[in-house]
Length: 303
Image 1 (cartoon, rainbow, N blue to C red):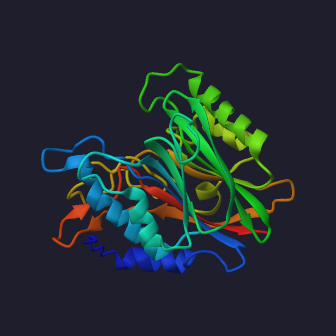
Image 2: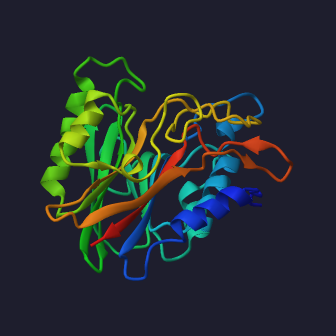
Image 3: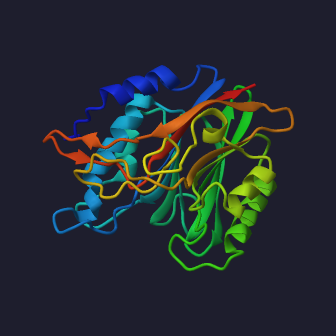
């Protein structure tokens, strides 16, 4: 049974600000990015998989309400031990039959292979896709979709950044982002969207390199990217503890939606905001955050 979500104010705000999906001719595209927290670890003896079976239902419900055109997800585990949810099936069932899921694992194996990585869901026709290993347990994949205004390249990344798992050298984050940018430059057909968990904050050199390369930070351009204290409207990590915690404790901004407009600025960002930035209320009255990350959403316009 799907967990009940009681977010009337949040859902009303999302519909008022963003509508429900993009225009019929794909002139406007609603984009969502979220690191869903794979749940391999445990919060405690009563919460296997960090309550992933309940959390994925919260995520699926929110996406079903919003009906975005493109969804970028990180930390997607394709299969787990007994009791682990079928993430792809749950999401596709909630979104509807018009959506296609494309998965790329963290080691750069071919699209659709591997156990854990990034997933891109879209209701736009998929032209092609490829996965690319960045280094260590990090990758990004490309999905090229068709719109009435030509192809659009989508890139989904989960990066090590300033040291999410490992101790990294001072120049490692910049080298990593240079590898990302080189792959995009070699494979893009024109306009591009890059989204994901960068494990780097706005003032870090790797994020500055994104801006220097011409990428537009959607939340900073058309929303409120302030992240000075915990709970600010631009902070995306971390919401822990996940269970029965009404307070937004996120104090870092490390999740982004970037767009590369093209020479004639053929794509612009209309509005941007956070996604799932409050805990869901379950049927038993308990509170549960959908992930340890807060997502980002943006409404883009194709010219």
